[in-house]
Image 1: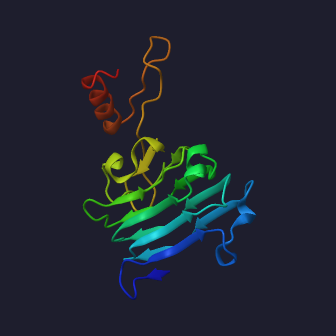
Image 2: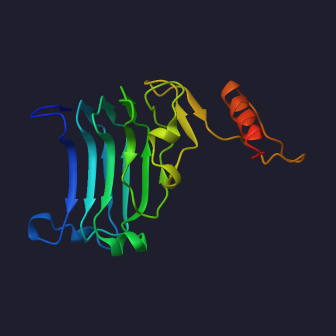
Length: 193
């Protein structure tokens, strides 16, 4: 458990790599796995910060089964400080942010921010601070996919964010609950369906 101390802007977990011996992460060149799981952070500025200065590429990152309560800045920050790595999109082979509980999300703050790579981030199946979150505002735009979220902190009630089916006579949309009906209505009103 990480509790706020010495000011609330500190990171609970900082994973930073550069080209010097003190921060040499060259073991992640060509792959490797990093899993952040089973942690609790209370009132920290950032729960997990990854800063890649040069050497990390093709790493698989999984942030799962954590409880992040009342972060003051952003819950997860993924920075890439080397333009060449960012341009190639090689810093991550995959990024998943699943089955986490984010509570007391401050107004105007995001759960996932600063990611500049090209790999899609799977941020499905998290509790995002309320039973009806504005997950598009809480997560970083077009590089993050969310196909479901939990309505409760206990992670017992999963809600799909998309409809099953393709909308044809042979494969009609399947609407199973009120949330999916609202999603369908909004999709029709936006001219997407």
